[in-house]
Image (cartoon, rainbow, N blue to C red; front, side, top):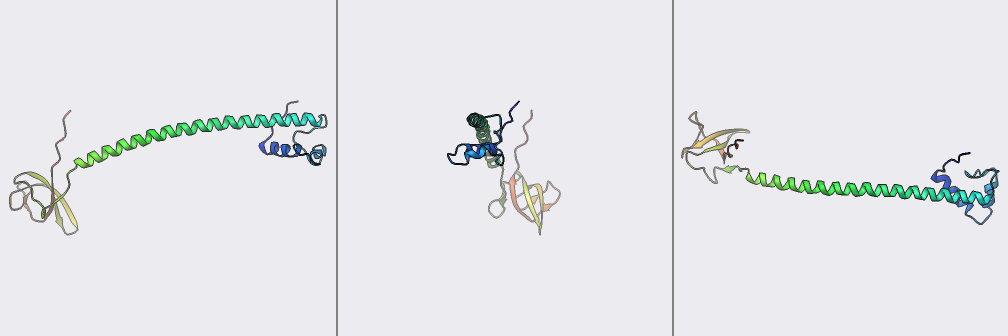
Length: 164
């Protein structure tokens, strides 16, 4: 007859009853108690031996589970460190690229060189128009189309794309 494996709750209950020195131990043979290991063909000493083996099996299984959990945690820490390093590299690269971006310059602070193409922000109330223009010394000109009189900011053009 194959013995069934005890649940942790059954194992704890049986260990507490069989491990006591008082009358509770005698309840193992009482039919009202229903010890998961007790049957009429066995003697109490064999019951305790089976109980100890079951406890050892349960502890061993928990050790295996703990080892697996520790391995999973260790792997997660490695991945986390790699992710953190990759994130730091990405953040550094973003900061480098942001430093290369031109910033808007107020026309009240500085005007661009004459005849140099720039990007301008032309204010029309709450609406903004962004155009390419050049400064002729008096106003911003949109490549001969018409002058822009409400320009508030400008920035240099970015570098042209590199060919492959």
